[in-house]
Image 1 (spheres, rainbow, N blue to C red):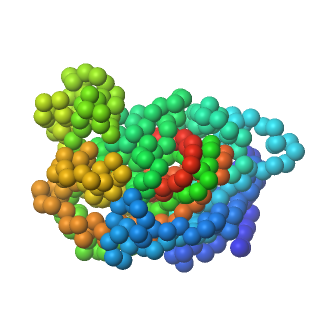
Image 2: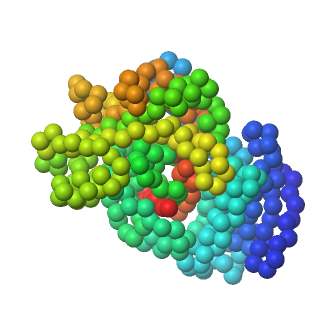
Image 3: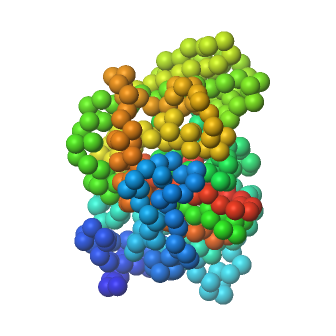
Length: 391
């Protein structure tokens, strides 16, 4: 790895500029504050064992022919690996101190991405003094980002501290598909943070996918088709009295129908009630323009919000529901059915582009939600993960 020092005034004088060849053969230039962090390599976070994808039970699409066989290990620079320095004068520093250091570091990394010298921001930080939910809460709050309220979220998450939610609430036997958080919604977070407080004895790998690379890898005719026909997201949410996966009261954070309707109307949704069941929908395109770079990136949940995602979950294993009566479903905005073959191509391309990491306890993974997808694979035993979604 070649490197050079980039001298900057005062606070940034000790920043190092590391340059190496990325998989795309384009040079990637990353700013690392060497006062507080050392840059690791992909070798530091290689998957300890092969992670099977094809034929994996409760992974949507995995039994369809040509599904990727295994999850790839991290490539150099994706994610960027940072290790908190262990110098004597840093060993006893507080969570707040490390939060301030990381705030400066993240700012530099977003500048690198904006000026075209790096890939989308995906950073794994190792060695931070984060042992509890409250530690993570204090660390996140110190970054001075705005917390994004998970109102209208389709997953099962609980708020457990300021700025902190539980991880994916789906059954541990189920593998969560690659996705950008809340990309099915009319509003969505810009950033996602994940920390591991207790590692499972087996499985539970976190997969991430470079959205820029994914956008380039998707078949051009398929991209054009989705651009032309759009995506309609349909939600069908039962009342909490039905003992459902995710009630409208939980999702919309209210017990009051009038308040639910006000939220939906203000957010740009069409909606109706079928007795106690709430049905709402909106149309969207398959891409967004990234606000920092102006580039189009693939950003949707065409397959994860589709009924085929729920049909792969243990609780729906023997279900015979109509597609539109699962918690969510997608069709094209022109009301045509989305071809299952198209969804399979998208799933395969996403998993072929993804890499996996096995988070250690106290690790923090920071992702640009607009340009990096993530997922959680099935696991055995107990596992405690905390997340934060931010503007």
